[in-house]
Length: 290
Image (cartoon, rainbow, N blue to C red; front, side):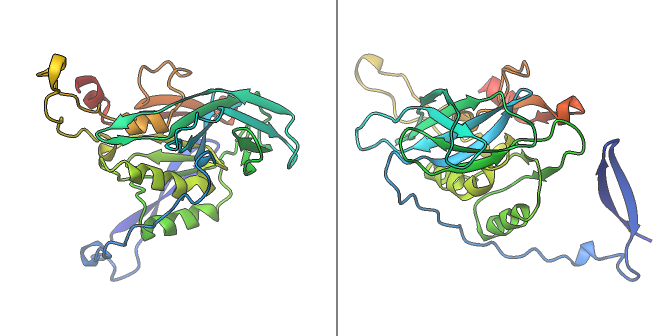
């Protein structure tokens, strides 16, 4: 009789339980019909250019979190400060931290200012309320992971931004998880950079509330054919965006803290070190070879 597997997680690690299929179901996989593709989900930024958007958080070390967000600054004004105010009560911010911001270009696209701020030290398993930037910005909340077992992970990959994605995110939102592990192929932008922006807006409700630890897939490579040679003094020089430009700029992971030379592979501790998670992307050699 054919069998199917169910993964079980507990304090002792990961085990697999073999479950029998129902009688007469031996060829169920052969009868599977792939559902048709679903359309993209449109997410529009309808707030002022300096309003933080695409907010997501990640674990940095034992008791810190990195807050990332984007502001659109195409109106010519200077970028708002990379500041996060936070505290354990709504509207009461007892601490603040300052970080940095940068932009990147890809062909004729230029990103907004991408801000990165690390906050902490933070208490484990605690809800913090925070706002990004200066002024009366939207208040968000996050919960830090626990410092001991049990810890609950959500594992997803090939996320995209279609109606199927929206259904997946809805299922995740129903779970009281601690950390999301995203195993590559995030936005499916494939060189269309505005899709990175719409993806960030789509996942913000979840990614701003729990740490999302991501790694890359083949859809993050995004190297395009170079444009025509530059005229004048630089004649003969062909400029081309580097691989993983959007991924590296937008989703900064704790590579330095884990001793990794690349954001494509790194590690971090969870549950006070009871679990050590290795995020190992399979395309690191592409970054090294160009």
